[in-house]
Image (cartoon, rainbow, N blue to C red):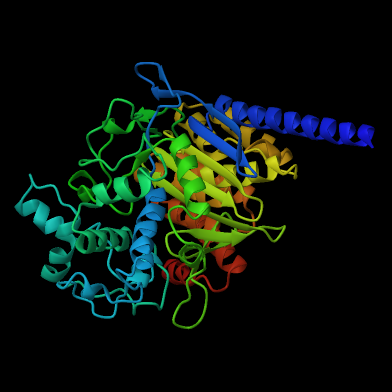
Length: 492
């Protein structure tokens, strides 16, 4: 009997060691291939099994990322905002089925409830173009949450759909949720988070900044690729904001929280042990929202159907285990808090170079459970595009030929090649665009969309006969391609 116990613990120790080494090798490979630059923390059965840091917090100064490095966690912040609302619900301060107008009297849509906000089913317009006129009239102003309702009223913006009819991800929902927290409590959302979430969870290195554009000393710099064919990262501060409001705003609720991987581990431990929310409220957050027609509020990500609850996304994996998560994305930044509820396993990823965190986190959950997993791979279209841009067309062709023989060497998607081809076309790099689409039809020969795109590029390049061939092939593959049929009718 003693021998059996000894052998059991020896096997358990051996398994844990192998798993730990595998995780280390996994992330070392990612870092080597420029697929992860940031902070990672992994727990299994509630205990931390791996924590490490990769790359630089500041590339220019060669400052390495460490345990104190702070990252903007982007939309992972939505889980905090939802928690704040549900805490107030638990205390009897609100009902999430209450209309938003009950707390924000000037809100112009009487049929939108707090539940609609948290589940992204409100139908409210996005803020991307909402402040264009106001910015022109007052270019020095910084717009914040309290400016949203007046802008909706002034611009007479209608709802995009009947509340509850559809699911549509929208940051405005969480700006309004944060305003409701402030209205009910009488304190700033920043102070509410500190008092009711950060402090109880002992998150000493987390905060909501007064101005998101001003960085604290431990905050990392953010880096991204300036285009789809670049393999060299640049500091996002050197890039122009893609949306005018991004440069002129200081919204909070949907994002903005600054934290560390260790603090996020403390947060999820406190949350899932019911220190921040009661069991009933937490389960409500993790239950898929229902649309008016009874269907589940959901979206697609990496070929998975993902449901959305109240501030959390969720799905069931192949082993019928519940996975809940929220990711975040800003220019030069990705974040992930993913938890296998069934097994009490968690993956936290914070990257300042926009790493593929959803795919990575999923594969890590498989790895720590000793299941078959895939390594994230380098992006074929980016490397191919960089070779075209450098003038090495021969090597670019060899890259495609090599991939066709061995598809396990790179990650390739129709979407990425389409985006690359169109970017070359917009930049009037016509030869590179045509070569990209020519390679795309080799890689995705059954894609009507790729042939349609190739036809458009050929047509813009004055190659009418070749364009007709591509459009014909596109319509052949997809007889419902109305655009292709329309173009062919005009050309023939």
